[in-house]
Image (tube, rainbow, N blue to C red):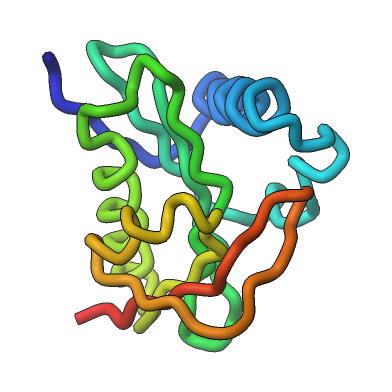
Length: 145
């Protein structure tokens, strides 16, 4: 089983793969309305793509919030990429990108079923649970070292 390779999305082919993956995971699998899946941040965010044996299997975006923090979001991993460390590799790569951009912390809105995953990566939940696209979420944060 190959380890996922992560690269920053810099061309239209990779960008198309990002939206195919997000559509498959969020719209088809989780039933998120398509009009809620894409937003204005998609025009300015940095995107990362995970590949296994050259095939795109996961993605995440990082938005510079302008206050020293990055917002990690829209992380999606196809079934073929699950159970291989793809999600953790995407989060670590996003943190590296945030550091390179001069950011000192990463925030995210975690689906509550994924809290343990993010906690294992050093994220701490705070605040009240909220609904996004009909799915319960919590705010989480990780200070970059």
